[in-house]
Image 1 (spheres, rainbow, N blue to C red):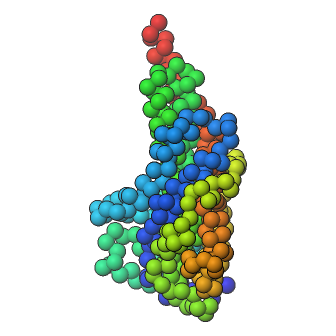
Image 2: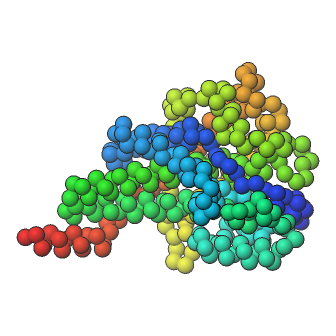
Image 3: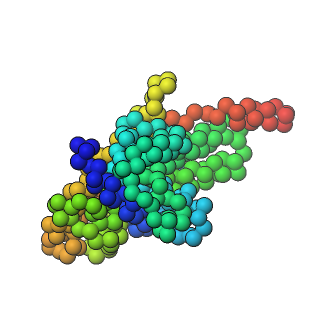
Length: 341
Ligand SMILES: [Zn+2]
């Protein structure tokens, strides 16, 4: 299997263009709104005020706003967090099931694998690589995992302020942090259910193309928003189908790879299995956006938005359920209370 992949990978890795955007802002908003709709009534109510709900929806677009800059440090740090070209792991002799959950440890694994398998990677064109992102496969599952951890930490702080004498402004600040993190992380989860964010075939098919899939470089942008705009997809069309959040498994045995990271990576691999069906739909002219004829394309893309909302809602719920009081903050608050007496 791998030997069949190699010529393809060798031919395309240097050509692979990092994806520009995933869902347009409207699509990302929908994912965050679907996730809010999927939360159980027991989830903290402050996220559901109209102001908070609008803020969470607005923040779905934030990481793409960070992409529209020319400054290289942000272009590199943020740009790589929106995708993972899974084929590049294989090319470097790595596997999704075993790569490190720790970002920089994985980066070292990938760099070593790339150096050991130079035949699988063609030269990167320096003229198209000012931000030095093309040496890397993308870090999407690491970004999602890290945001989950930030959110869990924010829930820990909120809980501690609430239980151990936090002031109203401290509680309000902790709630604002949670709203911010929920909104921003929603972007990356939304990216993870745009199948073109899991593959080197992100801007049209590259390399050997026996099935004759489209090589149109605008294909990515069409899936991000062109199709949905043409058919007039609105949040209200998918909102009634929002799926309920589930608590995800996180218990990790000592010394084992982080369990939640494994769940997120498994999810990404499952989404990558949707890449070819998406190209098939295009080949069958079911993604033209013209009705009738594009019903199947519409159902496929609605399903992707719903999957994004479901995973995001589940990550939010899992973070809030797993957050334990912060012992350092609690000690500080108790000391403050004792000093005030
Ligand atoms: Zn993105």
